[in-house]
Amino acid sequence: MKKGTEYTGYTTRTDFPNKGRVLITTEDGPQTVTVKDALEGQTIRLAITKAKKGRAEGRLLEVITPSEAENTEKDCPHFGQCGGCSLRTLPYEAQLSLKEKQVRMLLDNALGETCPAFVFEGIKKSPCQNAYRNKMEFSFGDEYKDGPLSLGLHKKGSFYDIITVNGCQIVHEDFRRILVCVLAYFKERGTSYYHKQTHQGSLRHLLVRRAVKTGDILIDLVTTSQEILPLEGLTAALTKLSLTGTIAGILHSVNDSPADTVQADSTEILYGKDYFYEELLGLTFRISPFSFFQTNSLGAEVLYDTVRSYAGETNGRLIFDLYSGTGTIAQLLAPVAKKVIGVELIEEAVLAARENAALNHLNNCEFIAGDVLKVIDTIEDKPDLIILDPPRDGIHPKALPKIIAYGVEHIVYVSCKPTSLARDLEVFLANGYEAVRGCAVDMFPGTNHVETVVLLRKNQTPKESSECSA
Image (cartoon, rainbow, N blue to C red):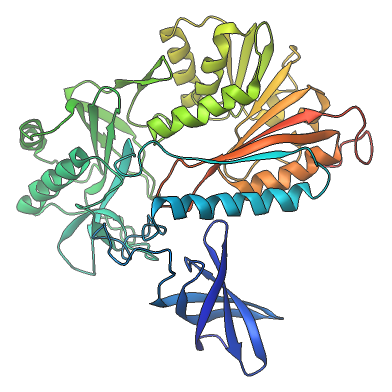
């Protein structure tokens, strides 16, 4: 096999997150090639991108024959162009089945036969399969070089090209109307967008947030400071839109950083205020443009209710919520707990957690800003229960021994990347813990992302040694 050679093959399975295992026939016989976004049951055309010592990777060129599970009609006009929803052609039940199978395979491989009593409880649905996102970060650009101004999401596989996603199905209609309004306004005025290579131009991003429970909307236009823009007219155009929700605030943020990230050096309120409130399982949370909050509000309720269930009886217990974000889990467990201590690296998230705890009249929550690896050395309190909700890469290898050393009876591990979870589970199992129960929670229908929750219980005797082998 040589790089660039094209083959036709059949996808025998799809591993997490989107790695299709495609069986092809070569001069040396059958061989399996890993191809991103190839779905189980598809016959595809691919081009080899890497080939080393029996391992090969390819790029998907064409789906020749869809799998029997796929829909033949696309319900999103941007599918195939936008890289956001790779599972969109699968009916929702088939998406759930695929994700459940992927998570179960990862857990089975990690647990082996060391946890015979482990119960995998399947996958929990998202309450909404469409229009579930409460936040979108749209980018300005063009769909092709020197093309007209566009506003939306990156074209699949492209760092520069932007597709105007005015038919996106995972957001509420209000998002689409706001996008169309803002794009038309700046197109009419010939306003330039920020070019990543030359660092010239004005328009960078449009951030839109919408509360599911209240319908309140925040709109934040992010630009450089290179040009004075006529924003009074934009505010007037937006406030005249016919929307289901209500615009709580329109903001203008300036970002002169060369990095392609949605951030603000400064923010000006053009209309209303710079926050709104969202409700989650009976608690109230103040949401600002850049604050972290689960992007699927109703799905988050399913996830956090699952965590609360796995945590069990918390009355009078001292709980550590490590990698606590804005403290949502901590606040859900706090009402009957003795105390909850949250640790989070991002200082802005910690400030938000403190504000929201005060908003919900919870005086037994303490939130500490810092790296879990270092902060837990400074905490004098000893936990009765630990909740772990680390970032995608999982727990720092040097933090694992410190967490395990507490010796708490139960740990609830929440993961947004089950491959990282599987890796960390092996360390817990080797150091005196067993997995008791687990499940997947679908927070992102149409995509290959999935959340996983596992309850760990302390054994009396470690599997191999009394010392952590992280």
